[in-house]
Image (cartoon, rainbow over all chains, first blue to last red; front, side):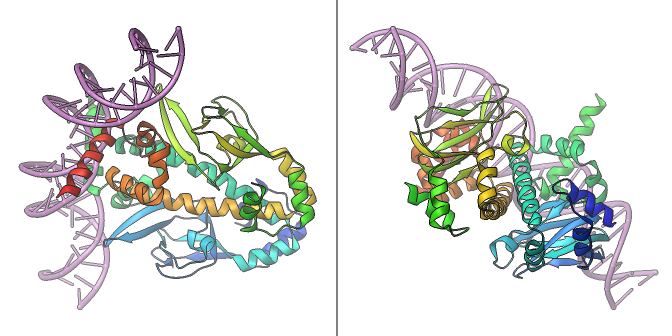
Amino acid sequence: MQNTLFDFIAKYVSLTEDEQNVLLSLDLFHSVKKGTILLAEGQKSKNSYFILKGCIRTYYVLDGEEKTTAFYTEMDVLTPPCVTSKTPSDYYVSCVEDSILTVSNTDMEVEVNSKFPKFDIMCKLLAEELLAKQRIDFDEFKNSSPEQRYLNLIQKRPDLLQRVPQHQLASYLGIKPQSLSRLRARITEKDKE
Amino acid sequence: MQNTLFDFIAKYVSLTEDEQNVLLSLDLFHSVKKGTILLAEGQKSKNSYFILKGCIRTYYVLDGEEKTTAFYTEMDVLTPPCVTSKTPSDYYVSCVEDSILTVSNTDMEVEVNSKFPKFDIMCKLLAEELLAKQRIDFDEFKNSSPEQRYLNLIQKRPDLLQRVPQHQLASYLGIKPQSLSRLRARITEKDKE
DNA sequence: GTAACTCGTTCACTTTAGTTAAGAAATGAA
DNA sequence: TTCATTTCTTAACTAAAGTGAACGAGTTAC
């Protein structure tokens, strides 16, 4: 479990044993039950999450409807926008499955950074990487139809189809559940030919 | 001009006069003519840009069509994904207007960072801020119709309607130029009522 | 066990974007 | 200026998503 975290970090910076021990002393690892709300709309939070096992979902509520904005799974990192902006959250963060996460907060970061400036470097590299990735995802989304987006999802994150309810996927794809149903039927029809 | 840059930086870290002078010694400021291609598909680049005056556009070419992904104007920062990923660019970066930019590259960053670790902090804060902003933009895009996106654009970046050709705006909104024309006509029709 | 809910699907109907084509308006080059 | 190109708009048609409603299957609560 700990090695999963250190393997992840190793992609960005190399840690001495001392530094690893500082991290381990922080009580980062937590188990959370399916359905747990880690963050609710209106709350303030300084917490970031790294998913070791499981799946968490971010969404917000618009006109009484849940709008799912992202799914985070093994080896993904999530820092909700409210942590960066220091304002009450517009988003909910909720556990799709029983999960094991590390939970860290900005205060801890400050402390760790004071001992090991490396961590700032890592956060910088990570943020830049996520920014570039998200840019590419956004651009792909813009220039594809719901059907293409769904086919794309099958390619890139086939696991999500198994772990996540259809109506959440639909919302994640920016369409209504009925449209996703229809679209899936259309694809199966095409495959038969 | 220089003050615009320092004002921007001041939002993230405070600089001593020495540090300011190091920056000024770097020959950062450049004028570029409308139409200049700063980065072409297939090229490698380490350059980042900060817009002091003017407008630049990023796009890629898919099936022979330009897909505009973003516009950057005064006080915006652009680091193309290829700089982060260190791979040949999928994107073009081009000047919509005669512009004044700072051009910095990753090597310079490394050098400046070695003298002033503050700059890594600034880059981290900036990347995190941009990541959160882009997240919000993406989520808004997902959950709105082309018409809502256009109305949203009028609210948030009215200047773009003046400075940028319609067909580039259409592509930026994820629709065809004909659809944008029709949609605009529809809105004007509604306004009459 | 049954009632209440949620979830996924299907259907009919409406609305809107994509497509193809044509023409008018603006821009640029010879 | 004139010709050519690009840009913007309009129109007719097609394809697909939104909407509202209904239904069965599965789940939860009492």
